[in-house]
Each structure stands twice: as structure tokens, then as C-alpha cells.
Image (cartoon, rainbow, N blue to C red; front, side, top):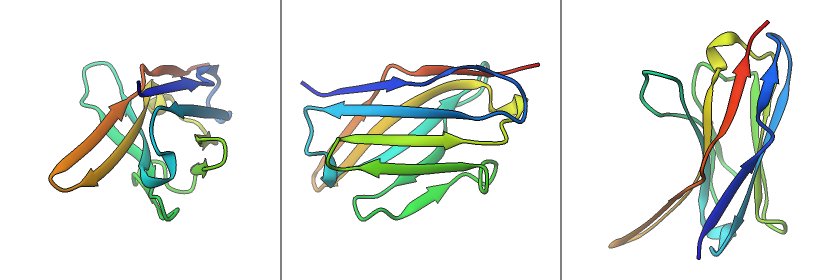
Length: 119
């Protein structure tokens, strides 16, 4: 059974920091591209950051220079360090595990963790 469990969300003031963590089980973690997505009320889910099995990273333009994604293949975890948080960063953040092994696509999601940036 695949499980992705996010933690670390909460309420923070603008300019503050939070660190999200996602613990994965039931998958061969190092083979997967791991990603963080977010969905704000009334908006579509969007990619925030991703890190490939080879540790190549990709960020949404809106978070470049403020957020850092990292992975620990020994612990099966992926973290998202969020600094200089803005009100617009408020959303539910989801962990994603993706592996494409044609013709099969393995795509798993966590349950989400709320991040609220407010004064």
C-alpha cells in the first residue's frame, strides 16, 4: 500500500518560514520524481517544486529564490523549505510521487497539509 504523509503545515506571518515534509512508504522511493503541489481556494492545483530521481530540481516562477525542495533517499522523505512566505502562498500543499515506466504511469498523492500565511 502506497502512502504519502505530509506534515509541517500551519499558520505563519508574512515573511516567515515553514518546512513541509513528506514521508513515503510502499514505493521504491529513489526511482520517483517527487513534487509539491498546492491548491488555493477557487484555483487549480499547481506545481510548486519537483525533484527528480537524479536530484534535478524545478520550481514555479512564483517561488523561485524563496522555496527549496530536497530529498533523502535513505529516509524516503522529501522536504519543502519555504522562506519569505507571502499571503499568496496560502493553500493546501500536496506531496506527489511520479514514475513513468511506459506504458505504465505510477502517480500517487498525499492527503495535503494546510499552509496559511496571514498577519
